[in-house]
Length: 313
Image 1 (cartoon, rainbow, N blue to C red):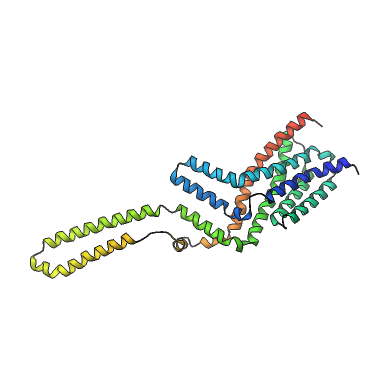
Image 2 (image 1 turned 120 degrees about the horizontal axis):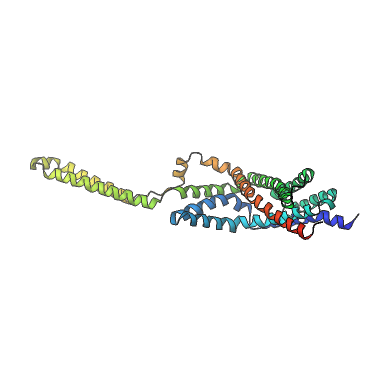
């Protein structure tokens, strides 16, 4: 068999292998994925309390970029390189060799990543994307459109299986992440609650003003009473004043902190948000990958067009 054909047919699989290996050993651990959406919301809310909207959005984007987006961009770039190479040598590729190389390298990734569900399903998504794209491939009106359509179709399939892998991986290990998700949800909900310290000071001030007003009114009424009536009402008057002082003291010592019990009482569906976390994390990741996919397809289309201009055939 022609060695050049074997290399040409297997080369895209090498890039798929490198891309999956990079994703598997990147800083983006599953324990980070399960709370990264909540963390982004928390950062946005906290920054919005201190600054304006543009600064909050900038801080949130910086967080997402440093913890998630750059990893997805690098991963997608490596995978898209394999897709572009696939398209460049499309007519010279032996479909059977390509399929076998895909399967072998993806199974190797599955073993090297300690049988990761995410890596296995992402690899399957790449294989199915290859099969579908080759079966339905047709040239468009120009090189850019051809590559854009070709890459986007494959990315769409891969992203679907990647998010499915994330969903199943979290679902199968939900007991390990349940506490982390629970605490993250508590922290996020607490971020939406107004400044309790400010509300506490406001309430204490209002109570003090009310008590002073009532005591002043009682004192004026008491002074206007006849002496014999004062003598009869003095125990009750003294008791009322003392009761108001005690109430004011209790309010002064009271703390209005919002704890887990209060949050659970106010949000009866809180437990459901914990149980459905795998689904919402997967949906959020799929939306993010869906936004990234056209960008990577456009870049791939530009690169492919330049290559075709330099080397037409």
